[in-house]
Length: 218
Length: 381
Image (tube, rainbow over all chains, first blue to last red; front, top):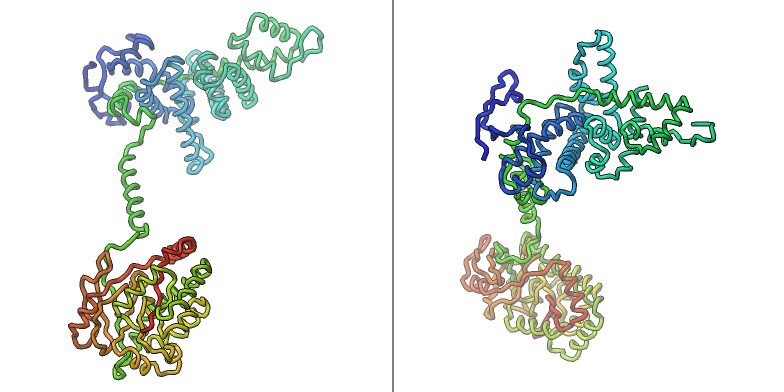
C-alpha cells in the first residue's frame, strides 16, 4: 500500500498556494518505476491501488497534452480528471484488445469532445467571437527562442498563433486526426484505435486535414 | 499533374494523400519511387510536397503545454475519493455528478406527490359530510322554501343525467328496452324495470317504502325538464301507462302511493301539487342528496317505518365505506324529531359511478342484460 503523505498542492493555490491537503501518493511511485501496461494493469486488477497510481503517473502528462490541444489548457485538467475517473471505474472491463494507451486516449478524446461541445455552446451564447484556446496558448507561443533574433522570434510567434488557430478551426474529425498524429505522435494504427476508424480512413483524414491547414494558412 | 505518358496522372487529393503518407513514412518502396518520379517531373507537385512538409514540421514543432505540477497526485486523490472500482454505476459507465442523488430524490418526490394529488380516487372509503334534504309536501302549512328548492337543483340535474343515461342505454340496447316494455305490459302491478336486478332493487325499495314521489314543489320545478328528458328518452312511456310514479329529484328509486287516476306530472302541471301529494302519499318523503355529494351518492334504501311527515328537514350525514350513515346532524332551524333522526340514520346510500363509467356499464349491459342496474323506477301501490 502506498504511504499517505501530505503533499503541497502548489498548482491549485493562487497566491496562497497554500492549501495543504492530504493526498494519496506513493513515495516510491514515479515514472522511472513504470513497469509497463501489462504489469500495472494486473497489479491494479489484483486489488493493489498502486497499479492504477502508476498508470496515472505514466499517462497523465500525455492525456493533459492531448486535452490541452483539444480544449485548451484551462479546461485540460478537468478532462484529465474525468478521463482517469472513467478509466478507474472501467478498467475492470478493459479486455486488452487495444493498448492501454489508446484506450485511455480514446476516453480522453471523448471527454474532450463532450467538454468542448459544452464549452463551445456556452461561449457561443456568452462570449461570441472569442476563442479562449488561443488566449490560453498565448504565453506558450510567446516563448522566445534565444537562438533567434527578436524579429525572427516575433515572426515565429505569429506563425505559431496562426497555426494553432488553423488547427483549432479544423473540423472535428480532421482536427483529432492531425493532433493525434502530428502533435501527439501516435502511429496510424494507434490513431485508428483511438478514433475507432480504419487505418485507411486515418490516412485520408490526415491528408485532407493537412491540406485544409495549408489552405487556411495560405 | 503530368503531361508525360510515363508519369501517372493524379488528382490533387491523390497527390496530397501520397505526399502525406510519404511525410509519415507510410509509403511502400514502390509508392515512394512513384512519388519521387512524379515530383521530379512536375514542379507543382514538388512545390506542394515542400509546402506540406514545412507545414507538418511546423505543426510538430508547436510547443507542448506543460503538465501542471502534481497533476497525477491530484488525479489519484480524486480517484481514491470517488470510490472503489466495481461500483454499480461504474460497471454500467454511469458516473453521476455531485448532488445528483439529491436532485434525483427531489424530482422523485415531486413526481410522487403529483401522482398522489392528481390521480383519480378509485372509490371513497368514507364520505362526509353529506347533506340530505328531506321534504314532505303533505303539510300545506310548510311549503318548501325556495332556498331549499334551489339547493336541490344539483340533485335534480343528476336525475336528469340519469334519465339521459337511460336514453343512451336504450339506444345501446333496443332489445333490453323491448324486454322492459314487455315486462311492464306483462306485470302491470309492478314498476318498470329493465331486468331481474332492477326488479330486485325495485322490490327492495318498495319494501322499504322510504321515499315517495310527493316532493311536490321540487317536482313542480323539475317536472318539465324531467318530462322532456323522458320524452327524449322514451324510456318511461311504459311508466306513464302503468303507475302514478315519478322520479324523485335525487334520481333514486321512489315509491309512490296508489293513485290510479292521476299522473303526478299532470297534477303538478295543473298547480295542485300539494293537494295531489297530500292525497296520495300522506307518509311520503322525498330524499335528495345535495351539493357535490349528489354526484357521488344516491339513496339506496331507507327504513321501513318512516315517521309522519311534518315538513322539510335538512341533515348533514357522514357515510362509511358501505354507504351507511355513521353520524348525522340536523341543519337549520326546526324542532328536533328523534323519529326523523332515526329514519335518516337508517338510510343506506349507493356510490354513483362517473359518467364515463356509466356509459361503459351501459355498453356492458347491452351485451349482458342480466347485469342491468337502473337507478330509476316506480311502483304502483
